[in-house]
Every structure is written in C-alpha cells, then in structure tokens.
Length: 74
Image (cartoon, rainbow, N blue to C red; front, side):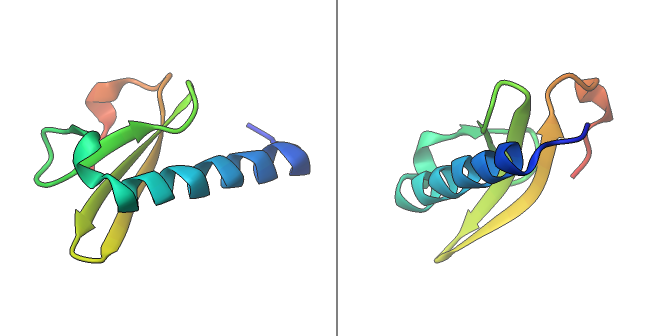
C-alpha cells in the first residue's frame, strides 16, 4: 500500500491522539489473549497492539485488519 504524504501525516496524527488516550485511560482498551497486551482500532483498517507499564506505552504491532487474524504474532 502506498500512502500520499498527507495520508501518512493524517495517520500519524491519529496515532498520536490514540497514544494520548492510552496514556490517560489504559484500562479502557480491550485485552487480548497475549500476556498483558491490549488493542485499539486506529482506523477501520489498522489496529494497534500495545502494553502499558508504569509510565511507558510499548507499541508492538500495527495490524492490517484485512489479514488473517490467525497469523498474528507478537
């Protein structure tokens, strides 16, 4: 997938807003079957998998939601 510069900038802005939400309300996001990993939808196509530990947010994967979820590994 090729993104235009403006599309990429818009996506980055969306991610930064979502990371701020994770920092302020980490408990609000759905837990996964992976140990201490949660997920949130960034766009209808992309889901972010992350972990919160004390004052840090660890980003593990930006997942294309159109892929086979059985292939997801963290």
